[in-house]
Image (cartoon, rainbow, N blue to C red; front, side):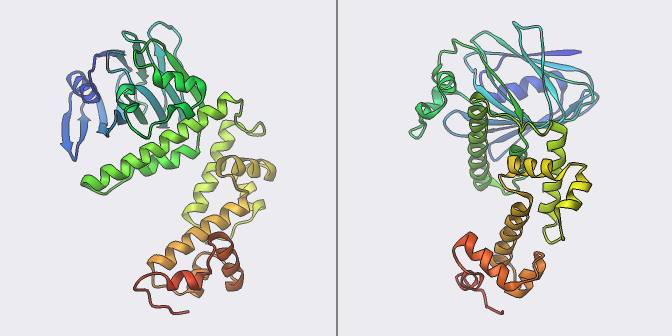
Length: 343
């Protein structure tokens, strides 16, 4: 096992001290710093993107070839860390504790330490991880005019206003499959320069709000649906991703139940929990979203769009489109600049 002591005054210090211990090259572009490693110790990247008001993002997309424990000292740079584990697993503990907590795929973790405390992140040998860490430096964040921590859950509010770092805080979140899609979109932003940073910052705040919502729900005792275990929810998400990739396919609840190995009741419970819709409502929602995009960006006429998204009745499509968006497909198309209507 390799232990790496990190004593950082800012986020960039972390990857510079990582580089000292595991090698690699640090690349800087558009305000981002990326440690690129491909050697006997590790393969992958650790990225840092700073934003305004003390908010920054770290993305670990790496595999270590030996067990590695990062022992991160809680210096004056002692942010609240909001972590989402998109891939793989790792362990966390405060140095005053002997027991490590396992953070599995799709789980969240929120923590901060007392000044002079040590945070231990244990990455396992040969386990590829993709971990998203939003870090908030409280003194800077509270200067932001729109920051209203008084609206937070009482306990989380106390954490944000603890700018002298007098207390530890730890919250091991439950499985959150909804957040995975948002984190993937964040990691896949392809634009460059200022536009890239603005898009990423907007997504970071959206993900932060999801962390806070989940913390509030768990604080109120709202957990996973009792009818489903974690592995079953992952199967539900797989079905949801399949529908998103191919919405035009003909789906029915019985076939999806057989494919997922879940009862129809469990499949419905899972969709209501993950997507706040029944299976049928989710399919209809995905198809209508695609239809709106096709009307906006393609040369397909309305009849062609209806066929492309898997509907057979144009009148039914027009009805549910207007129910959802408050405007008919024909009226919507007429409002799109430079689009010639062919129906």
